[in-house]
Length: 273
Image 1 (tube, rainbow, N blue to C red):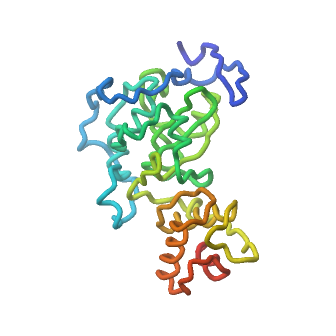
Image 2: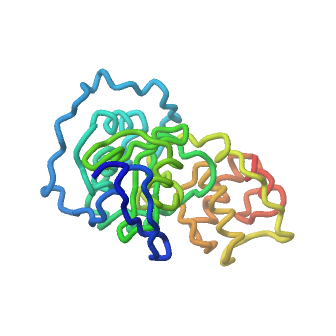
């Protein structure tokens, strides 16, 4: 099939639209969870010739020694070594680049999207993170290389791997860009550096009362998101439990605030700096 052939693309509401733009979408098949059922294609570019000079990384932290995922310079270099293969196996491709473990039990890109603990829908995805698209039975995931671009399977045609703007792939395939995550199934990716847009979002107004242990709801999710932005690794589930309280106390201590585990006006303001 050529880019000029008409194809029918499924939309989010399961209706169909006719399009003649762009390459055919990724084959809509589930990823396999058995790593033995695949073999990586031979790298077509020698590793020492892969350019990752544009990849910015953060410094190592105390959690990195136990992380099983690769830093952006490694995962992006791996992605750029491949120019073919993995047709219909987008999640398997991203797994391989990040060294993700198949025991995570993710069947396809939609499952990986649902399993993300720190999904972001604003800001430019930093290099080395999974980028998700919805609008088909199994979804699509690609690896960000920074600057609003991804390295994707089945682009610009089936069985090819190349780099493309997020907006261009979404338009050509009729998919909805759903966001990115600094984790894979809750496992944090070390060395991720967020863009200016993601790092400095517009501050939410103080809710008028302290957010504290046993609170639930949207305000708690905002607090958890800001704590994770500052280096915490807690679920953004809207429940102010012991993990969130401990993260607040650690944040308060690091900024010489009163360590009470409550998000009052001073702690709230500090979370947005």
